[in-house]
Length: 391
Image 1 (cartoon, rainbow, N blue to C red):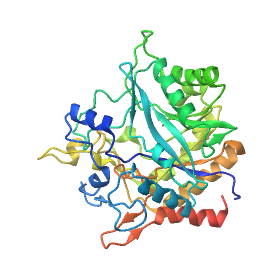
Image 2: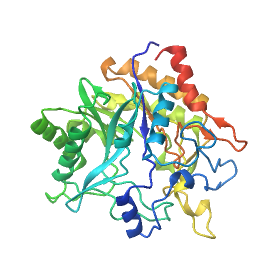
Image 3: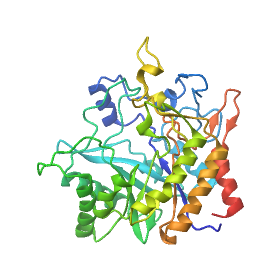
């Protein structure tokens, strides 16, 4: 393989210093914004063979297990880590929208990232149609009532204005086909009402392009983030340029029947499905490479209840076990082979889930092991494969 496509890792902002998030947490019954770097360290194993708790490091040092991404020193360390291990850039989870007619922006760490010495580290934004969870750990059956943005043209305009005013002219911003790359994650799973007041997700994607061209004469390259091709068809017809994914590893529809799933088995299943997905759509499919999946640290099981009582409900299932760097590396190689065979060269890239989803069991960041040593095996595998194959 020759070097043809960059590797970008999704970046989930870990910060407690967002005042809007703090206020939402208090309004929804939380005590304060939860420090997820500490939450993952207090997780408990729920069954035999469940690898919890886990401790991560933001800079590869065994002394760096608690941090806030809003700290420029912390962000610079992660930029340096990415360059050290041949990760080309980050796709930031970006929370900007409109709620009840008012602009909302949460967990912004990109502003701090842009103050760093970036070198060649590139970046882009994944616009999410809803806010991050403010109450963690999550009680069973609990859904925050104010997470989702208004499905209106105002939300779309706010997103596009934010991107155009703050990012699209940055030389480090990712471009595909000479257009600024934006992935769109439709996190809102509610049914929308067709009452001329709410837009469908497809309509919002269509309007993102229309408004961006009308106001800025820029046509962004939009990648819709979906689990299945059937979910993406309307988005692609509405103007999305490609389909990609995020935590596309476990079988979420089998959470009750298979609450515990094996990493290698899931990698094999997903790779087998890539061709089928590409056959169902008429635009490129860019599959993600996923480090693992175990969101149980984000959940709170009531006293006296057990894993079997809550399995099938987010965040307790599905839990993927036995994640490892060797099988991760295999998935990475398979993804590179797939896009070489199916995707025009100028549209090839590899998204990895994720850089730092430490409370969902999907993090490239080094782990601090119980004996105090540091496990950087996932990052080392990326560098090893890029050195070996040149991709």
